[in-house]
Length: 346
Image (cartoon, rainbow, N blue to C red; front, side):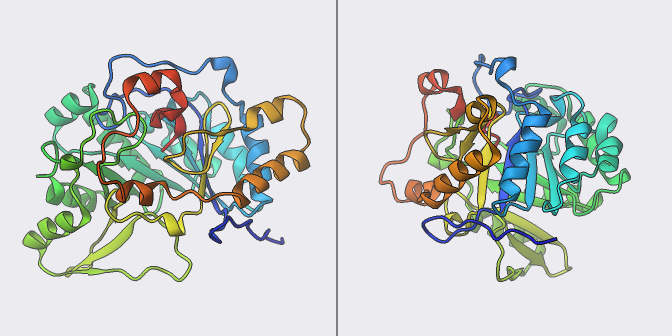
């Protein structure tokens, strides 16, 4: 099999990774993503079918994409998700299919997803305290999430990761607890700086716990910490670190130390809009092309032209602002729900 050479953007960044949102719905209401009481949902008729997703993934694969991540909202709310995974697993150029989930529904789906061909699971879990979980996620589902993590391990998923968004005043006193929790379950924790994207209407810079602070807090407990060298072609968003006892963890420092210059990922919303940056204001409506009868070559050309014209470096531009507030206010989000992270599949 000949692997297609990836198309490159204006800064030479290759198109290698694609995040596909399969639904904008979620069964939690985490404070950094969905803090408001009401939301505008995508019409179900606008949501891409599995066949449409499979077709678009094939077109992206012909442009060099080899890694797919299924997101939401909460992707496990999409009925029959293993059917989509099985279809994508048949694409010869796709080397990895991953899933980001809050794990609440994983106990009933983990084995079927693994059997269908899912390679990796990343679980979003920001606290190991049930009372905080209930307050922050507005749902008493902590035990279900833990059971989901355990189900993923039992199903045989390798390299399980736990993502934790660190918010000052909420869970910044749990950095050690999160690492120990991950260790107990054979997972690697990735701390994520609180980002001013999409629906983070309560964001403020003073709530951001920086990579430097995270490292200092962990060093106070574990002693020396060393950076794990990245591979020469690494475009992973997390920088990995190693404790003296050999355990590793990651930090995604998009707010204070952005990785825009190595970003190789694009995003498709549940209703088929292509976004080239998490901070982008507008997207390209691929669904319209798919449903209007455009050929694969026409869609491929549209995507390739958009990527070649890409100059996005949204996180770096945000760092340079002299005054930094929320990216979008509530009224802006209601006017265009595609700006929400639960729609865009952050």
